[in-house]
Length: 218
Image (cartoon, rainbow, N blue to C red; front, side):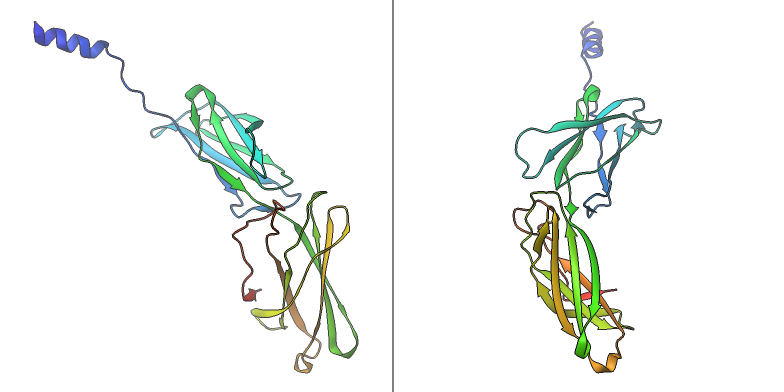
């Protein structure tokens, strides 16, 4: 009788439910240029089983990552438990996805938004070359980190640093960095060039840990 009662008690006790798993992946993972779309996707599962037709929320907290997260979009998982969001952000932002019914949350992810670059060049007298990089940002952003310029012959696969210049504000959310360099006569006026800009402290645009290479790879 005692054995039977013990079995009955065990059957009546509630089991421990496995917690749902909610993933979050950003694409592109390294971040996007200002004005481009950032994709966020993932899956909601219970063990190996997908959880379909479940509500999920995309929550965000913009740089400087203070205050509470805000829900900026909602979606429903498909038959495979997958969801997808696409959003444009003005500056860096922390993202997280919630599944309220399962009380599940994804890991925190940081989406980086870089200034949008555009480069031009102008041939000058005496074999000189003026390279200009334009950077576009939201209004109110201040860029202080120098732009690095690279230059190599037309057939080069990589190029060394040849100059650096601080971006100058030329309008609302518009910056320009300019460097003048000399082309070696042996290149006969043919060349390849590139540029790289680093994170400006306090801008909230780009990856603070990213750096410019010693050589630019074309």
